[in-house]
Image (cartoon, rainbow, N blue to C red; front, side, top):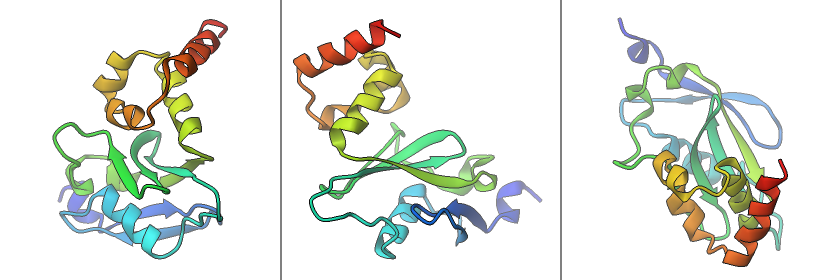
Amino acid sequence: MNQTSQNSEIQIRLPGSGGLCTFPLDSSTRFSDVFRALIGKGCFACPQGKRPVWVLLCGDQDLVTWVSDENTFYDRFPFGEPPIASVPGWATKEVHFTSYPDPLARAKAIYLYFEGSKSFMGHEGFLREYKSYQITPEQEALWQAECSNR
């Protein structure tokens, strides 16, 4: 019996509380489905006037981003997001979330991680999200200086 047929649920560390819960899987469940279900349950509180950006991670893989104020999702998959059960190892890793206070902070994190290389951003599936933040060349120049000082 293969691993995906043995796992009918994944472990999720809930944002805020840090509590662990299980989420049922079927052969077509995607991480964006998990994200939407948890949003529907109110797991991502968004205080008035705040614009957090939430990121779903499976193990250490940054896979799906939700920009709360636009209710927009970005994933890293050039040919469409695959079902969780189709990727060996995903169903056995803990899913957790991290957040950024606003889109600018998320854009900065992406920029610094890839040291400003849009080629690498594109290769790794982050460029579409990064471009959506409409960062000015002046802002990128400030971040590039940060990269140089590392």
